[in-house]
Length: 358
Image (cartoon, rainbow, N blue to C red):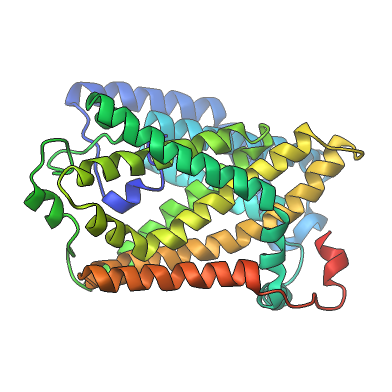
């Protein structure tokens, strides 16, 4: 994947040779023209649903909606992988996010949903996915180890996993001082609100993509986790070589405890739907997938909120707090909060919510 979540952590750029620009533009135009009709149809359906719900949608469009959504999600994956033009990529990210809320989003008012969320609806949904979360956590740890081992055996793998942009000092052979400088703050508080918005857009879009790809039996979701965490493993290897493992861990922990938990939950949510389709039990496949989709949707709404928190942490405290102990304290506090909410916070469901959650 060309722009995984962790790419936002390290702020790298990608430089294309001038000879490749014309070819890339041609590929982007051809890709867009071949699929634009389906994108526009999905956009029109979503716009009508946003204005008036299902009442404004005819039967043909309603039947086509899931297939159109999956097509747009797949197009977004291809657009990221092949580095299509920024306008097409931004359009697809926005379309997939809007369509996701219409296909999987909760069917209730915001106030009612927020009350259910605050009363533990999200934590109950997360606990219902415990097996998928355990699998996602195992895959993430394995991905980190694989990334470390690959670059430790052959440094050429580093550039395949983490294609550093021009001028990025985070490359094999960098000095300790160069690597340490990348862990400092860049611009102070000025302009960090815009930086936070950019990080939220990138992180939430990729989390939703990991969830959306779960319909393919969860396999693409797991592969996305492996790719993102292999990048982390490569960076850990690089900084460990200069004795900066603790400093890097502190730098990442500020937002990473929130962001990595969100990545894990989004992958688990996608896997949950994939497992329900592969092993529906006594239910028909569509019924099993629908039930899993409702549980996963609650988790994913919360993940988007986590991405807002992670973006704020990444743009402000991580940039403004420079000492290692302070960064670790922020990261530990956030991890404690999420674990306490998901594991310890178990209020009784409000009247009628238990049946609705099923």
